[in-house]
Image 1 (cartoon, helix red, strand yellow):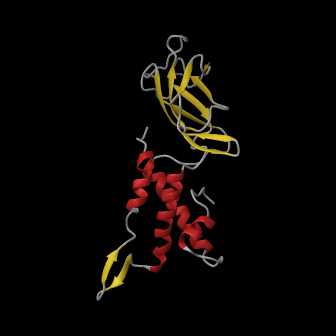
Image 2 (cartoon, one colour; image 1 turned 30 degrees about the vertical axis):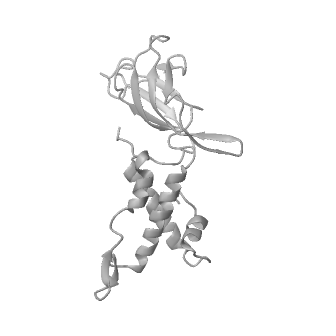
Image 3 (cartoon, helix red, strand yellow; image 1 turned 120 degrees about the vertical axis):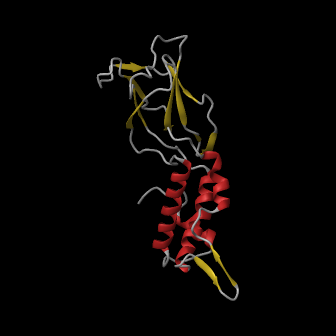
Length: 208
């Protein structure tokens, strides 16, 4: 099952539903809402279970925009110095580069653990290091990291519940219409819920 941004018990409580008879429909609604949020925001709100390897072309000799990096633990940054497809030079964090934002927002403090918003940029420390990114080399930088969010932000969870309810109710309107000719018909389910969209708008990321 793909990562859901709210769990089954939360959506059932939100709907006022008990029992397990609709659990498959609940799961489908949560899966659909979570993936819609991924698509709209251009990011995902869960952390890789293990480090992944990605390559990037830098913005300039000092700046590299990256996908969300959830933690600096296990972060490895390497450079392809001569465009041969081999990453010969390993950079050292806080010596050759830093991650930004320097003071990321706190998402949640729970159980003595502080979960931070992800890092989205690497910056060469030009006063400390002689290393530079090379924007003339495609995929000049190799980054090994756990990508994504370390914790699901509360607005994302709330948006998932709102949109999850919308998708769950879709089964009661197979033609996307509720009502009748006498009382009036309304089209409900063909768009993302506007209240949910308002909750996630601050998380929308420009595509790299």
